[in-house]
Length: 205
Image 1 (tube, rainbow, N blue to C red):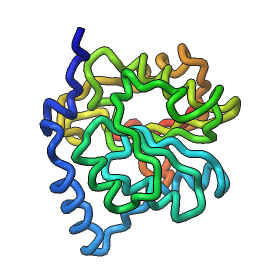
Image 2 (cartoon, rainbow, N blue to C red; image 1 turned 135 degrees about the vertical axis):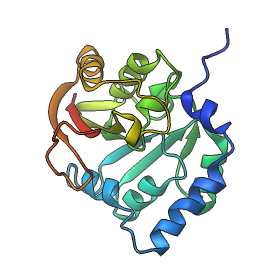
Image 3 (cartoon, one colour; image 1 turned 60 degrees about the vertical axis):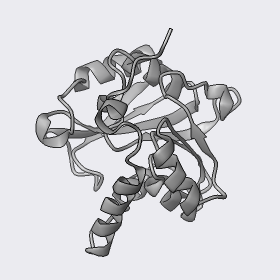
């Protein structure tokens, strides 16, 4: 039985890595701060902690975390994105896998990551119906006390696809996977969540 196609693949065809990287390079050249996600993560766990970048894309967040001293692993289903990441940081571990079918044992033994980060609208871009399974698989990589951070849009203004997951749904998936809600923010600068169209959620195993 074929796995359902993710909304990301429906949107991009899995060939947008170079264009995606060029767009962010242009933003960086314009002076825009590109490291908010990494800075947010670094405030949660100390340097040296193990971090799983779920839906790592071209590696922008993970490469910065590695530069800051974190032990990182990246997972993404899009080979065009991973090709960019591997070229930028060939010494880091990049795994091609669909998060809905991802085997936590491929990157960890009995759950030893201190942090899982899913930035960049990962959950709204999953294949429909796979969200609970992805949360469960990612939660299984965490050590007891480990954190999962997910930032995603909730309305059309913050998404390239129609909204597909609400915060109550996401919190319920986390609870079912044994995660406890910790906090929620509106931006990667840790501004308090204000019921807006983008949220960053922190849960603990």
